[in-house]
Length: 406
Image 1 (cartoon, rainbow, N blue to C red):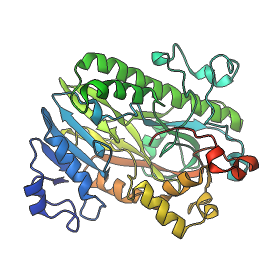
Image 2 (cartoon, one colour; image 1 turned 90 degrees about the vertical axis):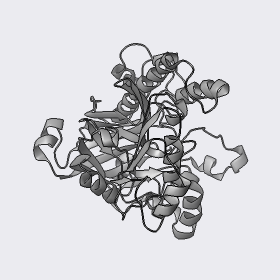
Image 3 (spheres, rainbow, N blue to C red; image 1 turned 120 degrees about the vertical axis):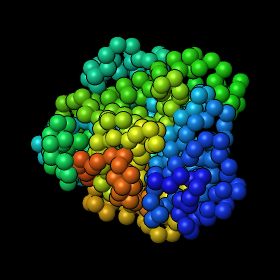
């Protein structure tokens, strides 16, 4: 761990004298990364900007830290003041893991059976869809737009297989063993969180919540909505693959604020690390890691949520087009398949656009924030449905655009 007020995060990126002279912090800033980790100076600068906000107590940056809109991604920020902008627009974004039982797991056959997760389920028109059975009670905030959809950006649904098991006893408690199949769902509140943030910024801008209790009530609806939607998507996919839906063994949110000891702990791209099991997502071409967390107050009781971006989307698109073909990106280095009809997104989300997940996990272990339990290896990663021949041939201006967010 590096106290960013006193030391350097990476010798080649952020000299100590720059850190001290240009980014004085009212609050403490700690970066939980090793000297060999890829940490951008812009992201650290954002941490210090956040630390200078009124009421800020401590900023803990994870090894997947990278710059975001208005606030760093991969950070947990403790304050006596509630700042909605530090949570962002995708309130409730998180990752859930569901066991799934299939007779045979042939990626080529299963990839073709994934449902269209760009098409929302309509409570009336799709009332007989069996996926609804996993939802109990009312839909939070009555928000029916986008129900059962995954969104764009780094969101995905993945069929994966448990690979290496590091902690057999803990893995057994989760009910998984090497070779077992899992559905991993990464998505958020599909427009609900954006609506909540916009209502705040229209009156308060980047400032604190005028009525924290009112904001938290809406925020909590978005968090519950995101969790229920992950269950709904897992059920849609399970049924499409010929399996029975199951309850999640992990379901954690990494975009939220929680009240802790009378203070506000904002997490943006940071997973709860206070004893809960978490899936730290790799890329579609690398393993992900199930970990047992044990992060303390220095890390704001948080851990990394994934590999973290190394390139901007524009850079990933430019470099990817020069280096890879579409066909190469549809078959990953681990042999898995990618279902993605959006070619631009295929390049933007290429594995090379992200940091090395192994380094992120090593940093969590080195700083005693988490213990790896098992890896999960992708078989099929779903991003968007494949286009039909007619859609693929249509001019771009005539193609329907499906809005989403990172």
